[in-house]
Image 1: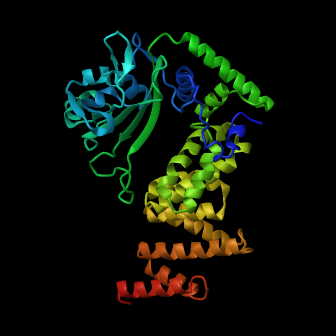
Image 2: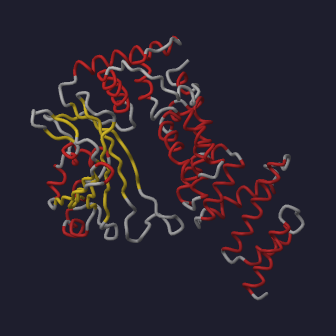
Image 3: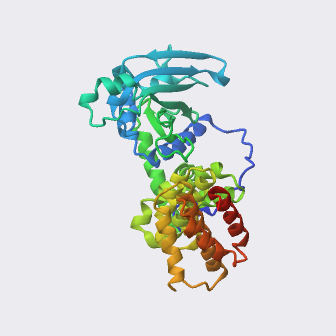
Length: 426
């Protein structure tokens, strides 16, 4: 049994009632929080360096190393501090881009008390609004830039900072959630058929308030023991269970895949994107190195993502995920891919539909099942639709007259012939 198999097969409703323990030691609580958050920090998708007073993380590091953005594209920044439940709010403004890059995110959530101890600002969150590719930066430095774009200006990087866990066991952990809206001109740079969708990501930072060597050594011992016990199928200690929960926070693929598919079945397409994208991000590398054991779940993940984006009318994104799996040559994958291309006005759509349609007419594919019959009828209707879309009226009429003889296509053909008559007057 693998390390993650044991956890993913566990009943998710199990253990929902927490037994009361009046003798709970707060130190155990803080230690457990450290174990879980350290596991999240180590096993997140991004590799993030540790931070401390002597080696603090700055926005320069985040922007370059974690977001892959040039510091030359950064302008001023507004900082919004929010107190508990939003009852208090304070705003700061930093004008110099060099000062913005030197800003240390933990300064927003930590302070030194009267005893000289570094402690969190309890109940506070901070939002950073960073000017990204502002006009003065882009145009004033045009000669020094490789990117000579003139349209992608006046955007923002929005970062939401919050402490996670009890936050007081000698290492402070912070979740940074990032959103970068689409460039405001020309509204949506991908395609006029897609709705605006921002870039989003999230990562965990760790700030060592005191030297961490001893507790990190103990963490290493617990994680190693966890791995060895999992391979032997042995029960885990409470500390090992806590570390496993932190690790599987982002890697419980079986649960995320099943939950994502269920959300799709409930027509909750936007809700399904988060769990399905977690599966995709974890498998997109593994499917190359371990294709035989991973490719089926990877293909179904791509299909469901493509289906969701089609339903949300983000057809270019749908085409990206569905295009990955066209080598599987499955009718349901091909149908959804063609839908994304046609709805996106992609010039490849005509050739792709003709290719599959001709395979039936040339005998390379047989109509030997209900699935293949439905596939053929779909291709015929899509080809007729494309003929009409490109104003190839004679080709459209000839094909539609043939489709009138098919029970599955009759109503479609009659309606489209009437449409052609209205448009052309013939």
